[in-house]
Image 1 (tube, rainbow, N blue to C red):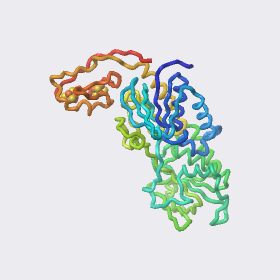
Image 2 (tube, rainbow, N blue to C red):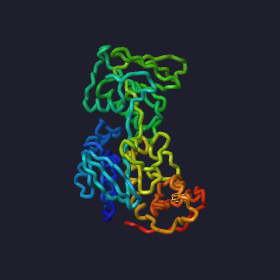
Image 3 (tube, protein in one colour):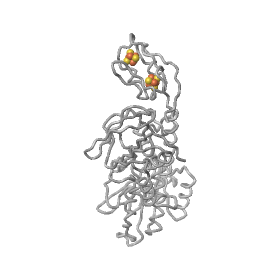
Image 4 (cartoon, protein in one colour):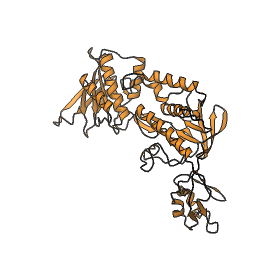
Length: 408
Ligand code: SF4
Ligand code: SF4
């Protein structure tokens, strides 16, 4: 299993994606530098009450992974730290890491970004205020960890009512699985009457399909939202929601007085600028995720060879999806390093024609061109796409043949 290499990989972000990538690469014999901005590893796992599959809890999984990381001689962890600078190319990255007041300069052969996403309250949908009884899915998880729920409604002296509003923001599998699993927990453990109002209750795997069936069979009531969004009225400590069920189709408005109103949050990728104070030159999609809409590369690859992105910074995904990303990124980085191409004469510059206009550098989609009086083409970063030669206004570039050589 353990193939000894001298290669070192930088992993940025110590959540589930970063930890899984580190452990996978360490098992393959790579040295790993794991950088986490918080004082503890774990990211989102620290705030989750349960997974939607039966079995291990988030806390147990986190403890197992932390133990494996602390026992691995291959993984060096920097907590309370962030990456200040990344320069270079696959097989030869120079990295600056700031930890407290110390600046560390390191080398790495490849990089995996696992910086996750941020969750924000979706206040553009409703004119509402955050209150004790109006919370997000993640806040519900935190309350469940504390187990602080009344099992009787203080207003009606009857079973309390919880309403999830879900599926307004793209119907992603994280918020759907979270609403489904927590609807069952609120009902079974805390005696709530539970409703889920959703515009997109789409499930994309057999286990989520089962969870949906289980939620229904436990008596959770589902509303299908149409174009008409629910109207939420908050007065003092009372919250009432008025819903038109699209499927009834008769315009009937249903009033639900909520003891707990849970709204799915919006996800924003952890921005490069908040984590790094330099430009990584990695392309993002329209929402800022690393190349979620890239159709030319495998999902975890970025436009910069040797820099991969896993988990929440690439797309909103379940824990299983993040773990699959991490395994895939580890496998890809190994094969990239094995196939690293080295050859000097692959782009020829005609110095008499070159006007040093920087056009080729601006157009290179892989960040493979630097300048030192003349354009310099990275022998490993270049993907031989030919765009620089096409865009050069003076026809100063010519693409030549390349050969391959392994570096591990
Ligand atoms: S685009 Fe052409 S002219 Fe401009 S710097 Fe590049 S090689 Fe030189
Ligand atoms: S061929 Fe030119 S534009 Fe394309 S990756 Fe190489 S240097 Fe960049």
